Image (cartoon, rainbow over all chains, first blue to last red; front, side, top):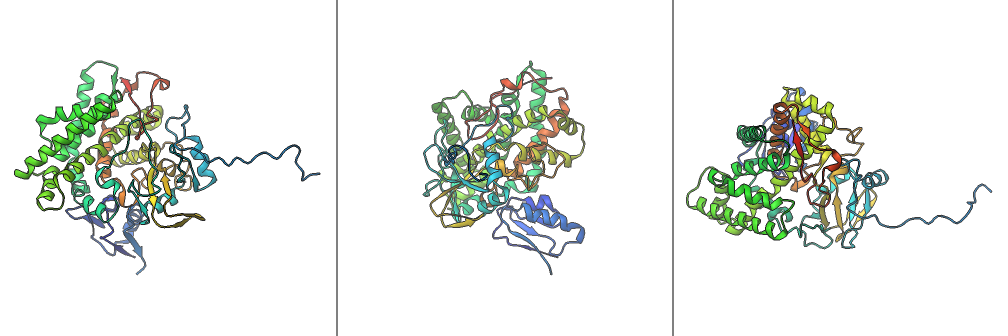
Length: 64
Length: 410
């Protein structure tokens, strides 16, 4: 599975970092950064939570 | 005959229900029963407001999130159809970017997102812990009963915002006094207005000082935007005032109402008091945010292009209200939604709204509440209400729901 992040949609809520801190971080303005495009399987539940709580619908988890 | 009815056919009531609706006096933590009934019947229905207008009310979680995330709605109170709030507190006024649309909204909002990044907020945690501990020390040293709202709930967010903005320590008392008046139950609209202007003038002054001598704080960073020609001094002041107002009474009410809800649910309070697990404390914060929902008048928008949703068309020029309070009690998302259960996973609640206007300060609010809920009941394990629940006055008519006062003892 591959994570896609549309940073121009990001509203800097940081909720992806709270949900999956091994996969997401924030830049100096709080805009999301993708650390791990293809996270390990054990991180996928956290990523799914990040997808669900992102207020800007800026994150997707897609089949590779 | 079996298919004939005796007597006249009862008239089908076609009256549009009024909004807001009264809560049940017995369940001050639950949404109005009428709203729960509407949610059961339909995801979308018209309601009548104080001014006779009839916007749509969105009752269910999925549709609420969909509309709040839709670019065909506007947060601009001047747009046709915007559902206006009525309140004894007077008009809403224009609060910087929260009543604007993108791209201007995004441009201004991004100027102040930095301090709310998760790591920056975490760096503030020790300062918030100190503020909370000091206020508890003061309460324990003073007489009982004490009003938790005045002694604890209101000062915390005010002092935290001082930290965040960079208000010098010597000015904290001035800042506290005036911010207290801005939200005080007994203050007249004139007194509130005067206090608000005092604070605005004060913030404008500090921003001016930071223009000349920048420091490492948010007011300096806002001042920097003036220097870069991105905003003027007036806009900078409005922005600083917005950050104060948006985070003050909201957080305070979550502290007081959350404490009352926990005192009414001793099993949940015991779980929280006896845990060392930061995750359970964080989970309790999410559940209380889901369960209480203080922004009871709902998120409101004007629709700018027709939106088809749940088998209906919301037309351009109509208004729409998302009462997140019932979205958070949607049984399809949160099983047994009317039960307070701090062990449930409530992270997907919409207490902070959703979409591009989702509360900017939510990481800070969450951290403040984690410190408060994780500290107060451990340090004062015998905390109890000093009166009966019947005597507590709830803020039925206010923009932000909560309690006017909460006398406690231990």
